Each structure stands twice: as structure tokens, then as C-alpha cells.
Amino acid sequence: MKRLPLALAATLAAALPALAQECGGDFAAWKAGIGEEARAAGVGERGLAALRGAQVDQRVLARDRAQGVFTQTFIEFSGRMINQYRLTHGAGNLKKHADVFARAEREFGVPGPVISAFWALETDFGAVQGDFNTLNALVTLAHDCRRPHLFRPQVVPLLTLIDTGALPADVEGAWAGEIGQTQMLPSDILTKGVDGDGDGKVDVRRSAPDVIMTTAAKIRSRGWRPGEPWMEEVRVPGEMPWEETGRLNKLPVSQWAGWGVTTRDGRALDTSRPEAGLMLPMGHKGPAFLVYPNFDIYLEWNQSIVYTLTAANLATRLDGAPKFDPRSPDEGLTGDAMKLLQQKLETRGHDVGGIDGILGQKTRDAVRLEQIRLGLPADGWPTPALLSNL
Image (cartoon, rainbow, N blue to C red; front, side):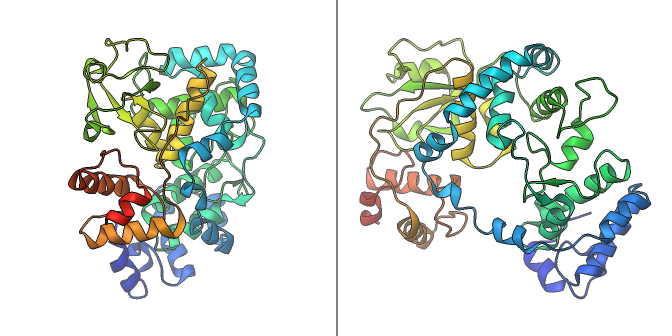
């Protein structure tokens, strides 16, 4: 179905037939339209009955509008998320399920530490899978007109899984509709699910082999390049062309070496590696990482730079790397100061993706442009000095 622009969908919701509504309007009529789509896709009575019982969950809407965790800095977030429990149990699971991880890497090219890091961060290896009714969560977010394009495509796949008996109608998971030990969306379970333990079914909630193999299949499907690195902590010099840094500006490793970038311990970089971008999540005085094409796959999982850097760094820790060096970053902006910065950037014509107090990619890009204009190190890290200059 062609997606309507959100504003248009909200305006016309009451007037359009349910099947044509992207979001909003009478909930019962909207559900009936979803039911027509599901029936056309081959969903039978079991799945349709589950849909008829689905309800709006106000808790889900509250969680969707209160994602304050991503206002934390990389050092704060990673320090909380990469804890000893996850490091210890991650190493233990890599050993306990070594044969399954080896099979996953043979078949999909995804290393065990990468899979295990997601397993750790998402549910603490299955310990905390969520207590939200998944169908209610998805219909709530799909009917809501804030981000229906992310959630509506997941409703029919979930109904299909329920209809075939792969999942119960009352299956529970995260507030945003993810299910299982690595928090997979229904469409990924339906199309990427792998029976890792050979029992004839895919169970991403209770079977560790199914979790490992299905997660590897999902990561590979997003474009993972087997045999290549994803992230490497580095040391940067006091001066270099900071405007060249950033995830998207991938350059030969030899170029970074030529500007004085070294490994964390001061050795020469391996110039045989693929092109990489230099990420400075807290500016040129903070931690520094070369990120390779495989790092971009992390953003297919979660679009938060803070989360993806943490997941990628945890994977390197599980692969034997030491804890990263936080160095001494300049003071950053939080809360109202970050919102004020975003307002000032918007006034200057920059698209920051909304005044939300979160340092997302659009805000970083706008900061970098203003730093260049003002003759400051263009590292994308907003500081009180930048705010006062604006």
C-alpha cells in the first residue's frame, strides 16, 4: 500500500475508507481495514480473531514519547550498558554455544561477538524480553500518526505468525513490537527465522540456537560483509582536518594514518583494511573510533549513534579488546541547552530533525557546518562555547 504523508493521513483519516487509511480515525474501522489486508495476504481465522481483540495500549504511547535514554552521552550510556554481567555472561555464552556460533559464522559470515553483543544489550541473554502485549503494541503504534510507517508493516507478519501457530496470540515483548531474546520484529522472524536446534520450528524466545542463527541471518541480510572488521578504537593527533571526520566520510586507512591517526597503543594502522570513517562521538578530545562498512549495519538495527557505538564497542570487548579510553572531552550540552542549540540551528536554516534535546545525526551535521563557519574544530560535538558563539 502506498503510504500517505503523515499530516495528510491525519487530516483525512475520518473520511477515507479504512483500508486506505495509513493511521488515525476510528480505531475499529481502522482495524477492519487491517483485517482486509491480512485476509488478502492469506491470514486465516486464528490471526483475524487475534486482531479483533487487539486494543490501544496507552503505556506504549507514553514510552514512545519518552525515550530519554538517548539524551545520554556515549560515555554515560556505554558505561551503564557495558557492565561486568554482560561481559562475563557474553564470554560464557560464546564458550557454551561455540559450535552454534561457529555454524552461524560459516553460514552467514557474522562473528559470534557481534551476535552476542546484541543478545546482551537487548535482553540480557533472554532474561528480560518485555511484558507488553506485542499485538496491542503494534496496532497502537501503527494507528498512531507519529511513526506509522515503521510499525504498520509489522502487523500482518505478526498476524501471520499467530495464524500459523508460530507465536501465541498473547505473545509479549518490547513496547515497540520486538519479540524474543534479540528483540526481532515480526517480519524478520517470518522471513529470516532459522531453526537452529533442528526441532522443526523457529523459537526466538526460548531456543538459544534459534536465537543465534536467526540473529546472524538478520544481520547478514542487512549487508554484513564477512571477514571484515566493524570498529577499531584509535588515537588521534592534536591537530588534523577534523572536517574530514564522520561515519559517512569513509577514506582509505592510509589517509587516516597520514594525518597521524594510530591504533590505541600508538602502533601503525593496518592499511590493508577497508575504507573507514573516523567517529568522534564526544568531539576531538574524547574517544575515537575508525568505523568500517560493517558498522553501518548496526544502524539498520537501531538508528541511535549512541546505541550503535555501544553495541559495536561491546562486540569488540567480547572479541578481546580492552575498555576504551574516554580521554578528556570538552563539556557538552544536555537538556534545555541542547534544545536551545537546536532552535538556534534551525533559525540559521539547518534541519536538525526536530527540537528534542537529542544529539542525532542531523544535529551533528548542522553543528559541524557551524563549526566550519566559525573556524572551530569541525568535530560535530556541541559545546557551551559553540552555543554562545551562535
